[in-house]
Length: 151
Image 1 (tube, one colour):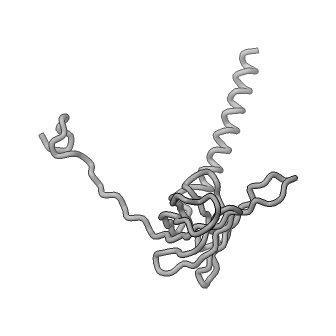
Image 2: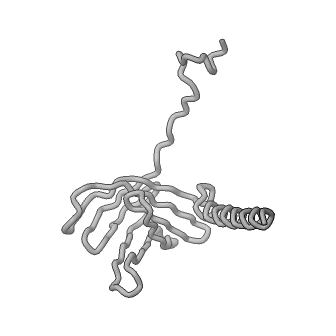
Image 3: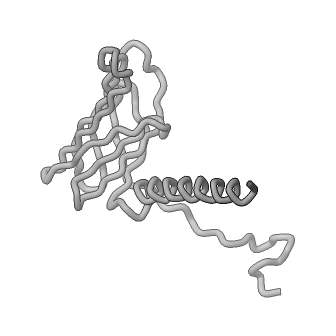
């Protein structure tokens, strides 16, 4: 009985880790060519008074674009064409309800993206740029443990 339970548990864990690996590969930071970040500024609508952060990830080999408004869990998927035009959309309504469409439209130029993010209630102006890399600080010169100081 214990052997059967252990086998079932092992199979369940293998299936979960396999699914996690697939999801990890799909969202891996090694799979994209450009990442642009910035603030979405309110540009009209009834319930949009606060700016919010956003990220746009592009993969040029298959013309894919993924946009995350408010750096949250919603991912608008779309495409980037040869002219640098980006379009992405997500319908967040349940199947039996009318569409609640979120869209991103705009254009790439140099290392930036300029466009509009629209929801049924709001419009935001999107000006996204390549992020500035964080500085590398491996240790503090006067750290209490003396790590990296040679003494």
